[in-house]
Length: 155
Image: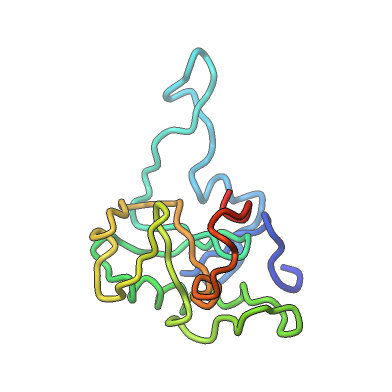
């Protein structure tokens, strides 16, 4: 992949520590519409079967990692870190915050709630198995109050 991560582009497999090719993303993330459960004759995406991976959005890229609801928040952050999520750091001269330097610099968000207790299990925050709608963000960004909670960033 080119230098850095561009918004809205790219996917990374943390278990394999490699980019997921754009032409394989729909397959990997189980987003291929089929006629298994059509809606008025239109193909739909069937329920996902993969319950062993979670997907986090960070810096415009999707990060897929093995994670389970009975894992602690700290264990999931460590798995993301070991898998290469720090590649989402912007170049030093373009940063408004310090960047990611360790797994402790990550904050995870699910359903608008910051998973702020590293010792709690993901299930304590009601994160279901195979969840693909989580956010990983640099904690310093949350602590700075920017982006503003009403910002289009969150749309």
